[in-house]
Length: 345
Image (cartoon, rainbow, N blue to C red):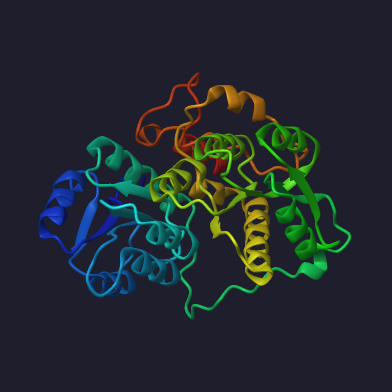
């Protein structure tokens, strides 16, 4: 981090006691500003430069997800953390699909974990900045006509229901190669054989199995973009999918063809963005994996040639790694990877 200026963090919460706690916890390492409502927070975001924003979910007038969506539009480079004591399904979905939060933090939080997460997020915001738009506009959809005949990049569906396979095949047609896996084992086999750009996964086999798979895939091939398409609605598990799997979108079943089409197009655009600008992978790093066995199975499970794949990011393997020195024999942390990427010692 820039030693000349502390990273700037904005905390937004309608409870003064929470703001006092956050300020006391973070003020030694960060320049902390506070706002007691979303409108005040937006005014600060529009007039100042913040590396990280931490927002409560339940606030009067505007929810945290609505606020972070506006932060994303006004200040894209600012890393967004959602703080809440609740796990409402709809709120968590919006945190993914609208505001694209980096981490979902439950109250009461672990102090060191929160500090380390903010430290990593601030480092990424500074090392991998995104431009502030002068006139925010809706990003244009990827031109699917350009994909005709380009059947090297694939969309991989992991779902045991053949009706879903038919639905996606009808949507994609001949524009993209659709691979169908009925379980994690089939998924790993297909990953070894094809250049997968997007994974669309159901959670019917259980959130744990799906999370382990996606987390392992993201650590092995971070340019692959995961979508969850399921009828299950456990908010707390979706929160883990954000933190540990960095899922790009959550789609609730059943979904219409036009909505699915938009989500897949958006995921393809994200994949190509990561391929073209690999530094941005650091903005989607996953937390530590608890399933090393599956990671070994997935490791290297990609049809991409080494020269085609965006650099592998093993960080933050643990957000704590971001704030600590890393020896030459230790796993590469997010900070170490960024320094290597930018040629810094």
